[in-house]
Image: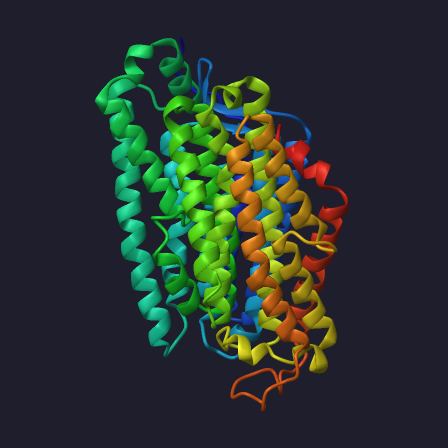
Length: 493
């Protein structure tokens, strides 16, 4: 075996584009000091990254940084899907941020630079082939968000949210690193495929207490990233204290990154006999607690945060089928992994549309307000309210939000194929609970308006960039609902 690693620069092109965007944003802000130019460079870089990821992924699987058969970078269809979605989410969030940035609430250069750095972590994460690359990419995705959450000038709520997010994330990262270190101590390997092969070929390793501890710590650390119960307490306070566009990024790109990391270690490295029961329990707790607590929320962003926790439970549910022998056949496993990733893609598009709708109905730079602030929105801004209503109905899994409907059908079908009918029943019952608060918010949009609330929707001007983001995400949700099999095929590659 040679010690020289091969390097395929074409496979690395999406990462180059994402990192180059961050550098160009920094230089543009330093040399030109023109906020509009900085935003344009960041937007073009995010769009270029999305196109680059899609083009490289369409050419087939490419591997680099390989030693023998073990590679640290594997760019296939799934990595292309993740990289493209993360880049487009970054572009959308940047568009939602334009009104607040124009108002001077946050420094434009720093904001765009941190967003581009986070995008770089998300793009690398999808192609990670070993634990070191995976964890470094996940932290590159997360670290800039500590600052973005607290970057709003003069906001105590943002500072508190940033501190909460920082402390919890540091603990989660420590737990993840400890789990990875213990797994390396047991197997002597770091590449995900090699770890999976070693644990499959040597059953005695799986029975070691050290292996059990490593698996538990690794799963717990990554469960923090997706806000799975009982590792979820940071999410509602952080989302509510963050600026609306940053909360949208946390709820979409950041959650997608956590899921991709969790999916990578579960699918390729860790034994299904140990991870399956844990993931089934996490899924049940996460969707049930998230839905029940969301019923009591009166603040818009907190409701979306708790619903995001519940949605994480639906995403984890197909992986719970690994707890049963029927769910560990090759066909059932492939269906479960594809269903989890496909659901995540459907969810992040609908979630971004929901946050875009709330942003469009609120004054520039304002927080999400309360549900009462949205009452009667359809009478003043019918198209924006209709787009928000479509996103909420989609998250509930009802037509005409076909993307959300097909997402839930995909999860239930994967569970039934894996013999986990009981877990499919739990998903169905929780989907019914979720209808209560999604439809309550949707109904409030068309309810008689209360006396014009302070900071409410009465005098919200039409914001061009936010309106464009809202329109594009709504159209994307509709298109995905009409062609769900495309997402499923890409997620299964």
